[in-house]
Amino acid sequence: MSLDSFEPNEFQEQIESVEDLMKPLYFATVCYATFSFVCFNLFSVNEPVSAAEPITVRIGSKAFTESVILGEALKQLAQSQGAKAVHLAELGGTQVCWKALLAGEIDCYVEYTGTIQQEIVKGEPIRDEESLRSALNESHVRMSRPIGFNNTYALGLTKQTTQKLNIRTLSELARHPELSKLVFRFSDEFLDREDGWKGLSQKYQMDAKDVRGIDHALAYRGLKSGSHQITDVYTTDAEIRYYDLDVLEDDRGYFPVYQAVILYRDDLEQSASNVVESLLQLEGKIDNSRMSELNARTRLDRIDESRVAADFLNEHLNQSIPITSESSASKFAKVIRRITTTTIQHLLLVAVSLSAAILIAIPLGVVAFLKPKLGQAILNTVGIIQTLPSMAVLVFTIPLLGLGAAPAIFALFLYSLLPIVRNTYQGLRDIPSNLRESAVVLGLSRWARLRLVELPLASTSILAGIKTAAVINVGTATIGALVGAGGYGQPILTGIRLDDFQLVMQGAIPAAVLAIVVQAGFGLSERFLIPAGLRIRKSE
Image (cartoon, rainbow, N blue to C red; front, side, top):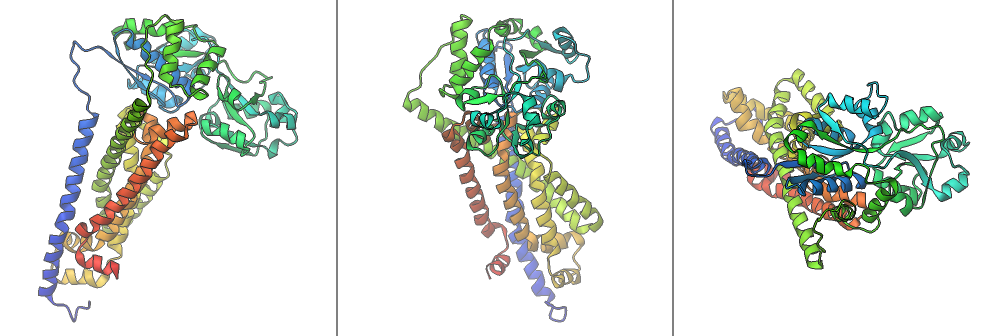
């Protein structure tokens, strides 16, 4: 369209028509954001607690079987005292649980003395158990006496590998001529911890070449399949027996003692001393062989952690925890309830985070287009945000946002910014210059040109960015399970930990279906949100 053929009245009519077509887009965006905000408040706000209600004790556990079993035991002991106990299982690693404890998001969890010394109070002059307890007291955290077992780190490999290399100790491994050819796969926490691979490789002067991180549960299957030869193990892991592994002797005494202890907030001792007294019944009650047996019942015999914990408490602590057996019908109903619950949680995470991103990212894209110098800074910033590790974002936000949906939504919001900002910016930039000139000739203000001409013409690109962000969010929202936000990530993480393919599929299949539904839904919405002329041009 040239200025010579420009007809003001005709173009004015087109603008008015486009404005009418854009009204549904504005209305839909506002309604979507409002609906998501209301849902978030309905599902996330706690009910008021009256004075007559029992105290609520929040118990955390890390993302491995032993920690979950012990968390269930603490939950049942708290319930035996009339408390309302909530178990936030599989919260991730040490830093997630510790920060949640400090922030008051959980009241207690089981930790290990070696981990406390190396990761939580590192730098403190720790000489013995009492000095460790004193260091924790400064953070208003109390530590029980040891539960009774020492679950230290070790390096494990298959018997075929040990026979082939003819090694039994870590020193023999370090001196082996084929060391550089071996493939090492360690859990991410062991890989980065001071008492993990960093210090171990220095102590034994291991010059390994192929060392990477992997999920702890997947590492065992990798050993069996031969994808790697060596991984880190916990000495009470049931997988050692299940996969028939050899554990290399720590002949230089590198690994510290990892006695299991209960960490709890001092205000729990003040508000519910009877609950604390009940929890402390675990002191000295579980030795290494018994803990390995409990782990095996869950990992090998496929018995639920709550049942394993209840059986132990009833037999060894004289508890009377009711145990009910599940019929096939009740198991099926449990699966349906799990899928329904995780679907609602997953939709909540995606809807709220995407709504916030739409309201923030589109204006940022507009600013990036209008202010080129500032725009480069905006685009670079959202690009850098996209590269941040999700686990790091969750850990950093726990002290500010706590556990649950909030930190997960914040992380998803950050990851949604880049596609929407970039597509908004690019869509505005790609508008033909003759159309811009026509709007200028009409005498429209800068805001009017943006609202009536440029944004409608860029709507196809903007909606494509929103669609991309939505699909990415559906997949990325599984990280919410690491901070107690639920969603499809919960059955996936639990299934990986328990080597339960069916449980993994209960999260993976619905997530894939939801991604397809979301993508199809945005495709259908184009006929309502994109001006008809642009849809015709796109189809041509």
